[in-house]
Image 1 (cartoon, rainbow, N blue to C red):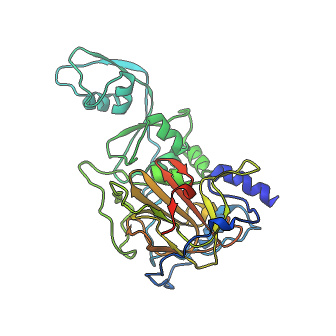
Image 2 (spheres, rainbow, N blue to C red):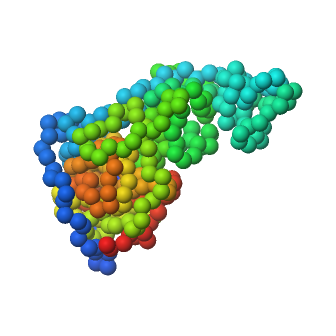
Length: 374
């Protein structure tokens, strides 16, 4: 029953992999660099452990404790900045361009997303229009994004999966919203806010949600924040993080020295693993696979427990799950080989292990084809 429950949760969360016995000694790796920052016992480190147990909905599976890097970690943007479900209903229609009109002005008057009108009329940047031209205005529900709102919070407000909103609006890298932007909310319009909140309570975060909907919306003319260098200088949840522009040289290194006990891809029973599982003793140093900026550090995805997500530039992202202690914070710059966490058995781990992923864009990539031994 436990194996079946784990397989079902894997499909829902894209990171929970049932235990399999055995491994392959061919995938043993070179030892990681020494720990450069000693772990510390900090007040408040136990906060959230009880919540994670409740979130897991698996009382027969103990969830290990996750210690955080700072004594008062900032809440993620989707918790710090709730969203009101006040989308505007717009009927299908058309408009004739008046002298002096811009596509932005037309979109604001209609209450529709600029990009939605551009797509409906096959307009390409810089969206040049002319007086007298008739433009189709696509109907639907349009949410006006306010400063600090994140995609995840918007999705929860309407009870719609964020991935559906990404697809409906054809959002692309780097997935940072801007205040004043109007985004289409797919699905029926009859759902009341209270019902949407009830449905949203059943949603569970996954890595893709955090990568594409975790950053707060930027105000007009606001630039993303520069990365910090220390975990104690945590960026506020209202500050969007600037990812690296390009991937640093040197390739990717193994995050830990251990045995691969679960490989990338579909398992025998059909469950999906977006990365690999590496068996290691508890409190093994986990190192950054390449230079980058921490996009997330926390335990918001129940299946993965203590979790670090790092953006490396060039569309590359790495993911490290099941940590017992997190030594970095969101917005922190890290170097290749730097210790970012200590391994554990948190989340739905079947043994002390590290869940490790590499993604290019939104697509998981087999890490074993990318990792070097030096």
